[in-house]
Image (cartoon, rainbow, N blue to C red; front, side, top):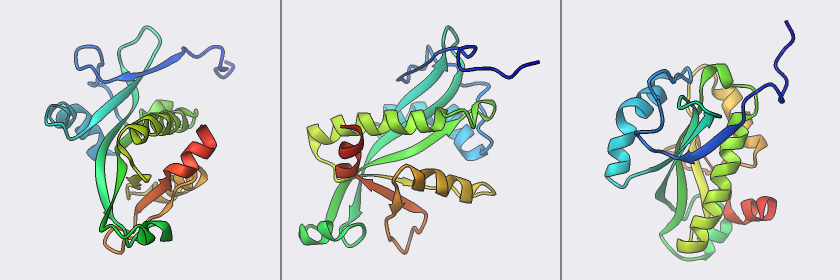
Length: 181
């Protein structure tokens, strides 16, 4: 049997999370804490104003195939690029990708990259409205850590330099704008 070609696969849609429209029940990315977050905590965090989420679904299907969440965060200016230190502020506003995941059977097909690019484009608009110097995320540690680290590195993320959180990476908004406009 031939492998699916892009033309054989249904179109994907990325839309703001709607509890009534997005079926999270069968989602599994292979990392239990993220699966549990999506199924058990996401709605509460959205209600509390701590995160906003965008969900990827296949055409004419409500099952979640991927998602990401965004929130506000401040990082100490001593971390990151020297320009942050020259700004003489104690904390730098950034946009935090709290979670990003792709359903296991969809991994390796470019959906993770599509989700990160969608998040980056959305972050440009947010930064234009309220100011944010970078996008920050924490690379999750498990047996796939090295693969995840390379994935984010290939997208332009670099270590923030926080000794308390060496797995935290960032990409300056100037880089995101230069790449995605």
